[in-house]
Image 1 (cartoon, rainbow, N blue to C red):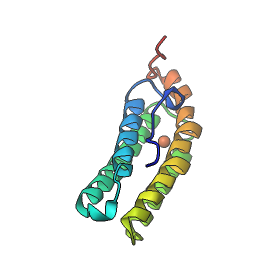
Image 2: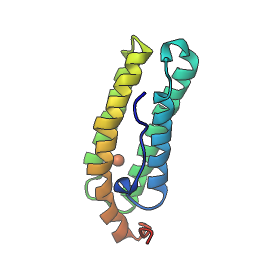
Image 3: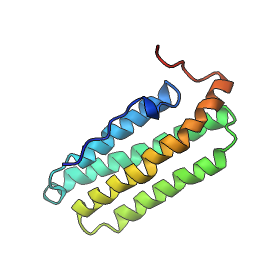
Length: 140
Ligand SMILES: [Fe+2]
């Protein structure tokens, strides 16, 4: 059983809604990866994958709306990165031949794309949020 995704301060972006949504994204990803044998629980597994997929799309839209509000300078590149993640998730789901393999591919996507994206790109939003007055101070 792989280690669950754990949110910690290195992923912190705004100390508010974005961080809460990232934490929820990690929880939903952990729900997907908690299945011991996805091929024996097909309906439950599919529902869990759909929940992760839908939430990721909603979160990306929320994040882009916030970036637009604070006039983040890299909004279009950032939105393209979101679209690429959604497109890859869609491709994996459509090409799925085994749910176990899908779980593995989604896990790689979460590690290589989503968590890397949070660390490399989402954290750049913090400066724009500070300028826009919407970043919450880090806890002491
Ligand atoms: Fe993002």
